[in-house]
Length: 283
Image (cartoon, rainbow, N blue to C red):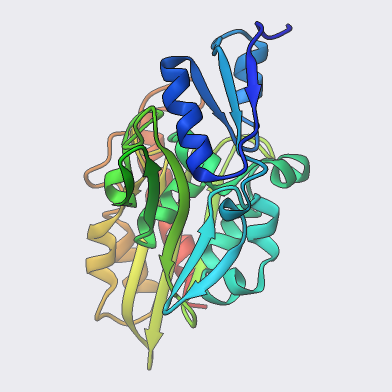
């Protein structure tokens, strides 16, 4: 199907993009990589009057170190996240998770920021952002503000981003030296997660010193498995201890029943995949 007609602009700066958003009002739509928006337009599930293309804004792309943090521009593609040496060293969990997103064509066009703003509960990257305590830099007509990943995701396909705001960058603390693993369960390759688990673990002398665990598609927003983290920290990095900690992975979650899986099956998957992910992360 052919999309309905719309106006188009490609601003060169964040400020120009914000001005275009304000002028367009509720008729404006941001175009990042287009991997979510373009199919919606073609199906005429949305008919915006103005498309604001961010691809010419250089500030929104790239990876850099800022003190002890890694800052990634919102328009950085999944492929560039996967191969970037800074991300590999400091955010190995993000690198390996980005490598599981859809297929190579999508990873070369889709963007980290676009996927996070889309806020699909089955999307892979939200759980990583929550687990790794990312901070989102948002720009709007009143200036810039920072929102933690825990506060950014609010409901199904809903975030803290206002209609006249855009995501500029995502800031992560460094996790250099941590073990990491993303365990993804799907019906077929390259499809959306039925359930996935993101795990990053720091082991010192055989003891779990710190742990971060995020769950994909176990509720309307990405969930941090704090009970698993608490059970892991201070204990031995052993198979038995990890299995015991993973038993609480589904606590506090609200998975849905749908055509892909029943809620109780998703709870089972959360426990099994958490155990696998943490075991792999500790080596």
